[in-house]
Amino acid sequence: MIRQDPDRLREQAARRLLRRIRDLNLGDGTVHLQDGQTVRITGCTSLDHPVERGVRYRISFSDGSTEVVELEWKDGRIFARRTREDKEELDCEASFGLNGHPTGLVELAGLRSSIDLSTASPEDFEELLGRIVEATVAVA
Image (cartoon, rainbow, N blue to C red; front, side):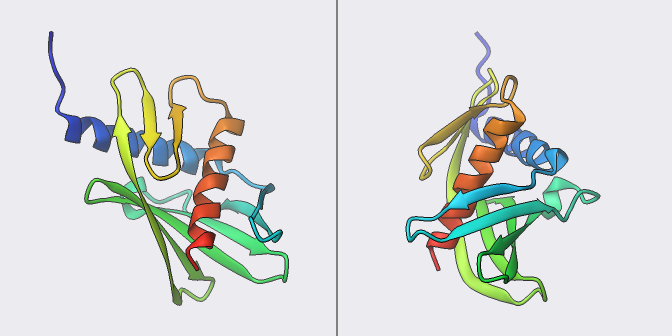
């Protein structure tokens, strides 16, 4: 039996996950926060960039303000960081451990979520992105 390097599996899984989230250009998803507020995911702003430079999604709050959530793979984790539209960084960053399996299953520790990259629907990716956005907004 050939065993694959776990670090290499995680990196491959992260790239596949980020590429799929970018390419789907998810939008019109509404995330319901614990405090009753809602946040809308309004689309990917990095469609023409390689995923190694991050995947960025615009989010809109119920008060009309907009921000960007950037997903990035580094140091063996997926980092999600919020910035304002004017690129001003906020002190809002969440990170999630990631485990990849040869079968295509990806687990995001901290979110208690997993997704099968080979069979997941766009709705599955939208739900996962919503969970990432919710966790990132919650750290504010």
